Length: 295
Image (cartoon, rainbow, N blue to C red; front, top):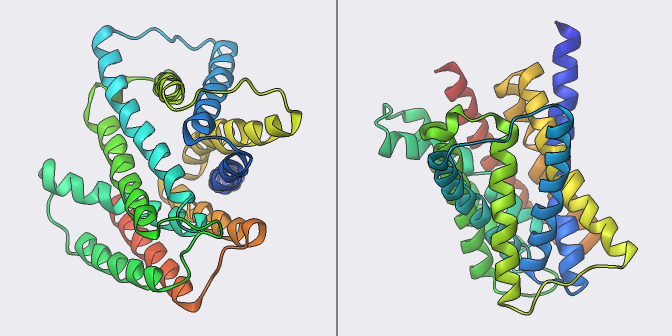
């Protein structure tokens, strides 16, 4: 039992820390001249191929009904919006700040369940939301600017959009026909459809290059395989062995990893206001996670 818990903690730590590498690999491609659509086309496309191969090796059945396909398409729009808005946020504010703001999505999920699905109103959730707003205010007074410049208002708005679009995805998985679909086919279809949408977007905004530079492929592999495919696989294993509560709490390593890498790799700033904001936001999320698991 203890061995399984330790195994789950390791998986959860790997999942959250590798998710936190996404801003680094994304910005590495952006600074090399990639458009947002190009970076996301490669991220989702390569990750989809990798996950399909893994699924086929495990004998996974990828067949779904037409009604399920419509549901999956709608869910893919939510996930695609999340990724696209985050990439825009990374280019306009510090990537660590964008990741911390995105980490507010559990609060958005809890609010959506109360507002639209008649879950009982919770003083705990409402208090956590208020605390997170205070944290966001501290964060906004800190050093949030991207070293490459950009529009900080646009960056904050896009990071906020990612919160609600990802919350919409999670709620959609819980409350639609998707809840009955196996996780591997669901993830592959969502990401595969998203990859097609990003390629189409790229074709209308300057095209999608065929990459031949080995160095660029290292960034693509890091983004698509390490920060996407391996993260998703590790997340499932973490939940399996350590449970959703501990896995969710260890998910705090994601924004912290992104923030540290942003400071070290890109020279992003960090102030005491930023530190207070991060702590308040993480604490507010932990409150909601623990409350949800206790029922």
